[in-house]
Image 1: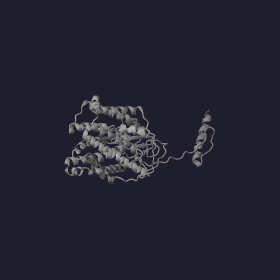
Image 2 (image 1 turned 120 degrees about the vertical axis):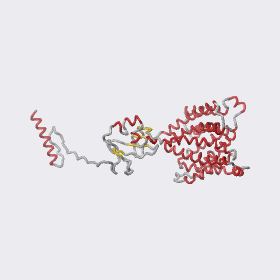
Image 3 (image 1 turned 180 degrees about the vertical axis):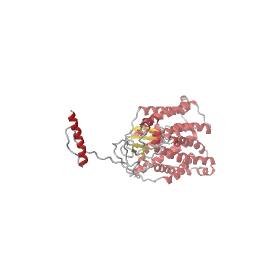
Image 4 (image 1 turned 135 degrees about the horizontal axis):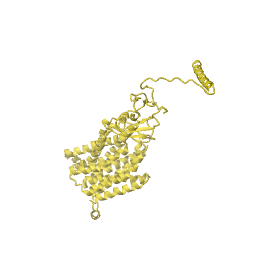
Length: 454
């Protein structure tokens, strides 16, 4: 055994010497030594990120996307990852310290557990400014670098979140401003002034991107005309006349059921599937509307009939539901601002004959400063600024998350009408509002879940 061990050691030593002498690997040395090949020399890597770096070795360079609020961060780590398509070297490449413990790395358990602090900082969000990791986990949605294995989305900064709570308040203010404006102008003139001013203000920002092929076909132009007819002319004329005959609170709660009518029309004309959640939500929403219209007593509704203003508000909600269903097949052909400007301009043209009515032109000269201020508020703030914040919210956090803030509009209207118009808020109206909003949530939740899917 002693001689056998010496033989093996001698064979290995001779093999190492032969490997240093001959450039080619020695194919056969000894049955127990096996095949020997000289390993390739390890290439030394300069310290720090290089312009040619695309991906990372463990704890080495990682490509990170410069995040904005609500943008998604796509990361593919590991030594065996496939290189992604390079977008050029940017200063957002960073090198992680090798001495950092695994629990403090961005993908470590501490970052997943706390969702704030160091992990959020490494992912590009600053907790001091309101940024935080909202989700960290596997995703099947492809990211900007091709295949994505892990992604993290970052919540919007706190100032923008506050803005999302404010824009329903701006829309709710249009109910109060509308009640004041129709004291000085006829309802159709208020609608004409609102969208004439709004379309003129939006024109410099519209048509900056080309539309899709076939967007200006004759049948598409007919759909655009119908959108202006239903969403601008029909909805707003009925809306302002409803404010003339009913309270702002009733009008806002009844108009809030437009999403329920949209579900019904989508099931009827777009062949969407009716589920038990949608059916229950629609039933609850319309039960709340009946409770509102009857002032909490059904026998009163049966004896005197519904209020004219409540019926007009119901018609306004139906007109907006028709607008929503008509816009779905053509919305992808135009940019959002372009489609909005077209519908606003078509609605303003359809409303222009209202100036020929008796007293319409004279109302422009005799209107008070408050009346003009209300018109400007509805045109620039409610229509222009409110719509901009709504689109910004869709871009930052998605349409489903932004739509949840619209639930606040009737709540804000009830509060504002109580303070500025002196409208009472009885208990039955609060309960009916809760029933209506609950029905809308039930009917809309499956649609939001579908919208969130990749």
